[in-house]
Amino acid sequence: MVGNVVGGSWKGIAYMRIRPVSVANPQTVGQQDQRTKFAITAQFLEPITEFLRTGFMNFAVKMSAVNSAMSYNIRHAIQGTYPNYTIDYPNALLSRGKLPPALNQTAASTVAGTVVFTWDNNSGELKAAAKDKTLLVVYNPAKQQAVSIEGLAERADGTQTVTVPDSFSGDLVQCYISFRDAKGELISNSGYAGAVTVA
Image (cartoon, rainbow, N blue to C red; front, side, top):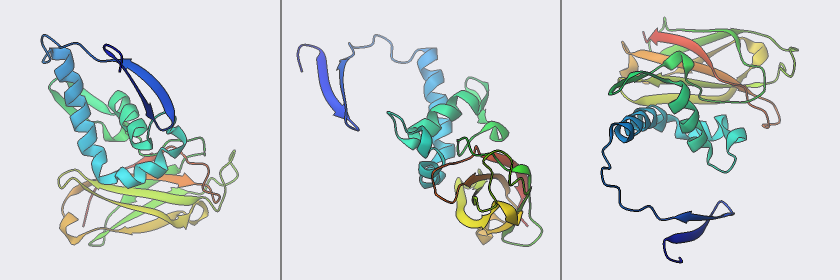
């Protein structure tokens, strides 16, 4: 540290920054607005932190995958006006990448404790392959919990059943599907499969 200049290293990247001077009013409307957006997004993503490490792995450039997911969703998945913000679930992304996404994805629940995902097999479109593995999320806003499943089905299967806790029965859950290629290198954007009341 020299004067008010501080040096350090993060993820192998050397940096220097200026220590902030004291802020006369740390509670401006703009600051509160940003803190509110951050808090709502963090609450949404916290139950799927491990999933995001896979979902945003290709966007972990000079930041963690989770921070990349936070940054994207703060910008694109918040609706409303301060201080009454909510998550815009259809516009949220839980994975991000260049692999073709699911086609005509839907979710339904007719049997207790299960959510069934279906999609059209679009293998052969661009880099989409029959052996691409599914990445599924069932998020329960009421309980701030989520079930995430990786790799139990393939793009060509067109369907996969996810088992959820009995306590989810009667709750409205938000459902997402994406794919990862067989080599584990490419990820698709997540697709919103809809809001489903668990049987």
